Length: 168
Image 1 (cartoon, rainbow, N blue to C red):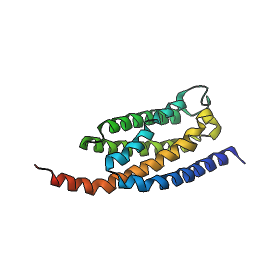
Image 2: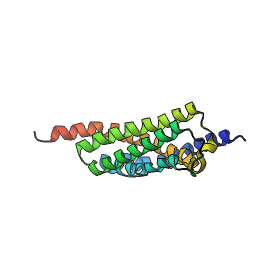
Image 3: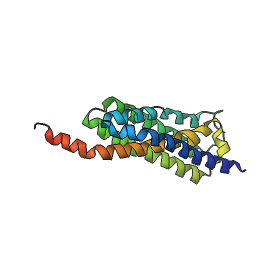
Image 4: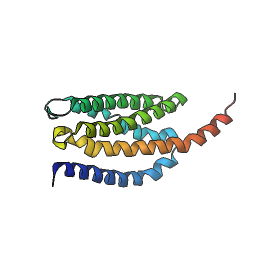
């Protein structure tokens, strides 16, 4: 089997495995108050600093395209900072706005990494020890971004009702 084929099969199976896990926890999350449901998902994204591994010589091949490595590493770092700030402010209106910003940024960052990898002709072997990031971490991150979008949209109507009940 070609290395690229193994790489893409690993990503596909990771989506399946994380999807099965997400399906098990989704019923619990969707019944919780918005902040409580978002909290564990944001906590997972507090580990997005792992993307900095793309910049560490010896972890990745010296042949790893710099355009991919820099954008993926710093995009993840910004996503991690937005996730942590979102966690800090989660129970407030600015916190929910920040979760939206984080979720949009984080999703766009991951999709951009796929685009940049394809554009640069990235080969699985160039990732070295960082191989686990796109094969294990990225599928989990994309699935949890989807879950956060669903929670944010689900609770959008509830938030509007709560706001209308507050005294002016």
